[in-house]
Image (tube, rainbow, N blue to C red; front, side):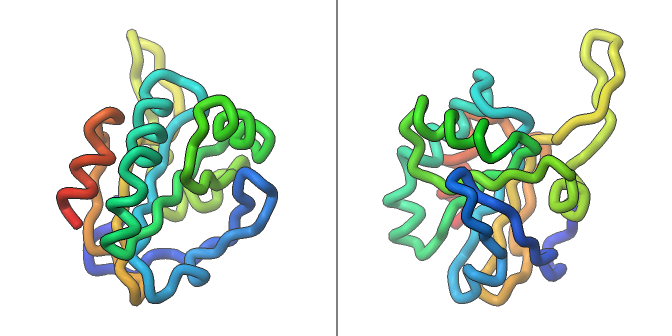
Amino acid sequence: MLQVGTPAPDFALPDQNGDVRRLSDYRGQTVVLYFYPRDNTAGCTKQACGFTELRPQFEEKGAVVLGVSKDTVASHKRFEQRRELGITLLSDPELEVIKAYDVWHEKKNYGKVSWGVVRTTYVIDAEGTIVNAAEKVRAAENPAKTLEML
């Protein structure tokens, strides 16, 4: 996990509409950048719906929420439409940003070892510095806890 106080790595990733978003596009705003394993799974749906529900409160605090997974643009679009999400989802199938933010780790599940995204949330200030980092967050609690932290 990247450390608080370090510059957040810039990136350029397509969103669920295919539009390229860069971290630098959000200079002057607080960015909640959360990494999640997969679209349309129980935990990831709770997390995305929670961020969508609290979006007005994040905006009141001058924050934008960006979700990142290795799913495709098309998968993100289906997820957005199916769950009526109101947040930006970024597609990183090449794992460039996922690895840059150190959230790609070996996981063990029922004795099986595999690699995957560790559910992690970073808060990045208006100047591009990481001001909060939470690893292995609980999906359902993460949106409210992140809002409280702001």
